[in-house]
Image (cartoon, rainbow over all chains, first blue to last red; front, side, top):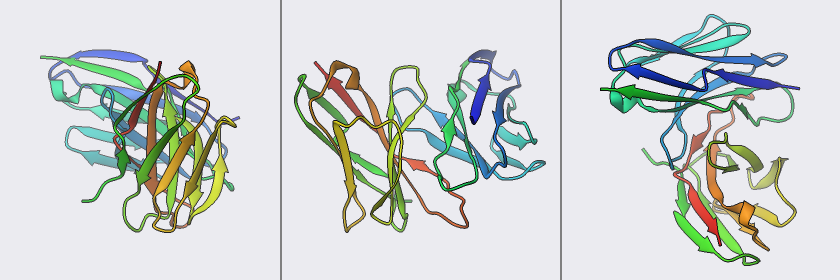
Length: 111
Length: 114
């Protein structure tokens, strides 16, 4: 069964303290891995899609990387406005295009 | 850029009542998805439509039904509401290309069942 595991569940950082969030997956043949940011009571905001191992994408202070078993979301010099839940989802090959979501990492950045 | 539109944003219902949630996908997107998200939970997939035909079904209760109309908007109909149906309901849309998708989510409808 496909599984997506995100760690840590919660992370507290000081402003400017860089760190990484992890998304481990067990999918036989990854079609795509997605990162989303979700603020409380709001819809997930699309950040990145990664398709193959070795791929990297950047957006402002965020950088996503992908290996054959996991993805990292690196946050460089975070600011309080980066506080949110970060969700990872994977799309497996086959007839269903429905991504499987992880439980998310709740990030709080203190000023 | 146009985003996914959902209405209403908030809905309060009594037990055993019926609710209808609406979703307007991003123009030219061919797939619509419905998700339910409880407090502290990840989004749980309910159902999806590709080009107005039901394409995938997830953990959608029999009390719920959905459809996509000719103008591509979708409605999620929920009957015999239960307290446990209180949650955020998200609609997402995507455009399929070579089996790949990128889902864009709407702002959600917060349903409270009293």
